[in-house]
Length: 281
Image (cartoon, rainbow, N blue to C red; front, top):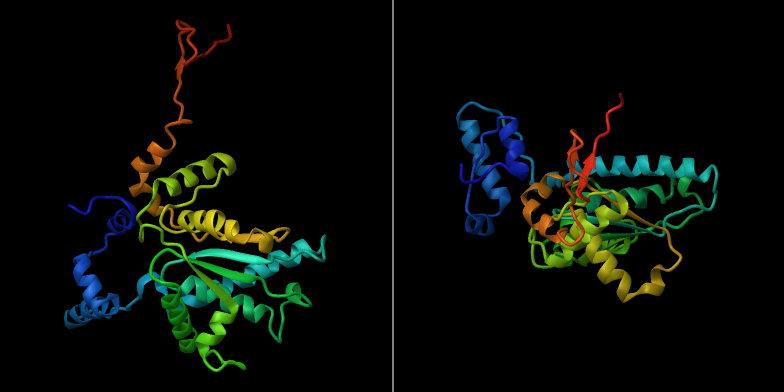
């Protein structure tokens, strides 16, 4: 009961999952693969047939999901190009937390612009991929993405190693800020203001942290590099992470709202904070 009912834990409880816990220290010392493997061994010994899914679904099988998503993006680009043949993205930006999303998007875009190019990519340069790491270091992600690519059977092309190839198709930025799932006041204010300005909600763990870092750090450090470029920010979800930050997000919006006004259904008040409901007779 001490885990509460927010975020992924809420979803796990809703679908009736059995939740196996460990301490942060145990997770850091043993790693997720060892812990998940132990749970699978326990389940097998009790007659079950478990399927181990790594953190974030970041393995060869899971990565095909974002390669398929890139194919969908290319179809959308093809539709746009029917009216504007020169349209293309110069940069694609997204959050990365376990490597699978970054692997799928980077490899997918590389394939789309390769020897058997997608019609929407013919004669066009591949956009620069920017993975904003919300945890760990860029080197960790390069190694992880390369490992996933090897497991998928990637041919190394002319590069000396898979990791060299990965480094040539994606730039990973150190964007975790105060730490994984730990938000600064500046990040929360950015997320709140972005929602006001666009109507789009960014979660504080992944997309919100990533877009904040890209706009306030990457763009500001090299503004001329991106001036006049079309930049696609890929919102990868993470809405469940918003609930746990509800109180903090509310504090960040206190200066401009949210506003609550009473509807007076009896016509007895005329204050500025009251909306009078006039009934037709």
